[in-house]
View 1 (cartoon, helix red, strand yellow):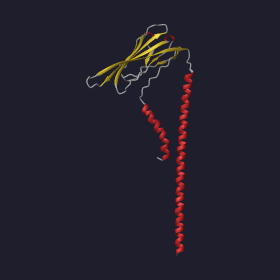
View 2 (cartoon, rainbow, N blue to C red; view 1 turned 180 degrees about the vertical axis):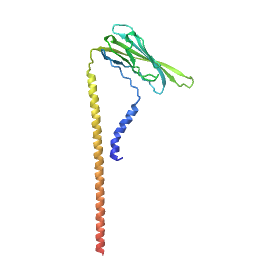
View 3 (tube, rainbow, N blue to C red; view 1 turned 60 degrees about the horizontal axis):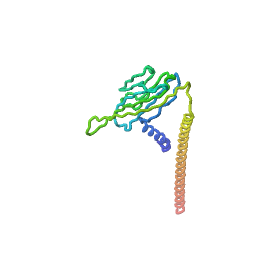
View 4 (cartoon, helix red, strand yellow; view 1 turned 90 degrees about the horizontal axis):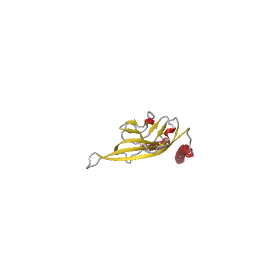
Length: 227
């Protein structure tokens, strides 16, 4: 592989390495809070462990308080890869949308089908997580923790986009285009630098060849004069 090809592949290799390092990371993202009537909606709830190497099990419970209610009601439970819809108002309308094929749950999101205006209100999800440590003196040492997240859901006739959402999307596209332009500029710069170095090497080789040829010619002339 030539030096030019190696330099061109270097940015791609760095991007691939960065992507591999980010793979599998847990990021706590707040749930959206605006649903459209008669559409589906994801109720997001993520709780990351502070130390990923610690084994754990978790169960997730969702609670709901309608706009005209004063107390929260348990509506959904997920534990040991099994789910249960508790509240009849959400029967056959809630589906698990979180961590799959694991009891170490970090994403406890659920999906609500056919949203209605009656679904407007306050939602709260609880993570009851049991951390399992390897303690030198206490075998099977377990430490229970509880975290919760709360958000208020609005239901609208049609989706509206706020200024912040529009600006975020514009900035995302600007960043993508800027990165691509930067990569193109870097490749052109590297190509010109390598091409200039090659031309300089050719000039030096040509100068050395002319010097050798001139020296050989002078030597031949000296031999002829001596004869």
